[in-house]
Length: 232
Length: 390
Image (cartoon, rainbow over all chains, first blue to last red; front, side, top):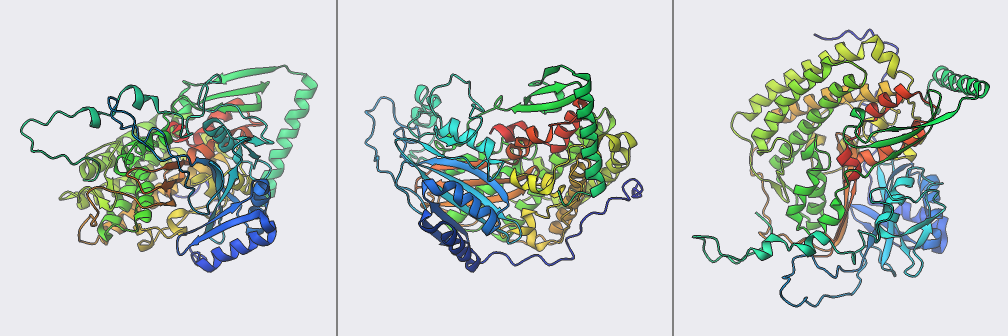
């Protein structure tokens, strides 16, 4: 039942298999992106990290956030907007929600350890854009001031940032200056709090402890296997 | 816009201008129409509020969130192996494909790689999920346009694929089969031959769909030139997968990045289409399904032997670091940005799903179209609610 291609004879699919795909990105290419950004932003580029053979991270100053987007789009050639989001680096005061509710709460470190390319603030926004012709993507981060969580909106640079910024605003409480419409996407309008912040408790875990902890009765016939945790 | 045919572009602009003039003359009054959350065209619970002028949409606002399950928060209270159970449920029609990028990200952080056989089986199951997912899209597409037959054929043939996935993994919809360092199990006996048979059936199914649907005059009239998304807009909004390739962008993560899956061992064609309209998006998906069956066939021919699980510690602790891995899922680019602080569980997981970006373009693309076209455009953009809301 092979179909004769009568109906879309006008359509000429673009062939790609004839052309040679460009070489997959090397670290020289990633270094070049960092250099391009340094030229464009000056001291707006705070830190960068090229993990050999894996990926490239850059961190820009908060006030250079939009300029970084424009430089990435126009100079580095990253036309494709992948995503934008935020990270809260505060260690969760609730751990993984596996504390024994009857025992006193354990001591937890409150030291903030930022990830790659460092940082000075509790929260950071980060985004990823890709250069489709060079096959290389960049993750760009910026600090979000602790006292006044505002960064510039990326909508003028990448229109697709609209929903991502709405989501980040709702989940982290970061405001995006210049965003026309920071309504909640998921939660009711009157919802209080920002669920993805680490100090927002996961209530389901607090009201009903994780079964792995409560279920301390030994299995019938089982041996004394006290090992916990994942793995196969 | 340079990639659209000039003729097509001009006729589109002219049609819109003529309509606008008419509306000014008639002084029609606006109306707000609520589509959803329970509309059959929304594949779940997406609500779209459209402001109409006569039959024309002047403003549209999709509101997601009816199925928000907060997976990004939930991953923070899980261990790494437990996360696959959650992410299975993001795109429920192609579940296995959701697990793969997360596992690959964790493996990258731990600096281990699955053995070759596991990588090949992963790729096979990945493509089977694509066939199950996109095959259903092809059937569902007909329903949106008033054709009932294709959906029965799609469900019939998807069943073969689901049976295969079930035979290999034990789960029809949520396999939860991928492990850090490999796979839970090897393939069962006779599975390879069975799969070859099914792939033949699936290729017939694609031909059947092509005959039934894509050659149909009504189908063509309702999709050609409707919902045109030019290349630059598609890139700005981060459209991915078939939606991006239908706008003429030659980009496929299976071919264009180096990840430990077996795609570089097979020969396949990445289809693109210059038009960027609803028809192009549907057509690309049809070709993709066919291409996926060929990929599976090639992988089955060269399936290496060996173990399916690398040596990993019994309790998995992932070293401190950050990793971003994305793969070409049935709906488009899906990726996980995994941050680990050396604990049993991830510190933060950002889940980048394809439908989220694909639907964020809706306010742009629906402006100026007619109400019946809203349905076909939504159908051709192809989203899954779990994939938007997470």
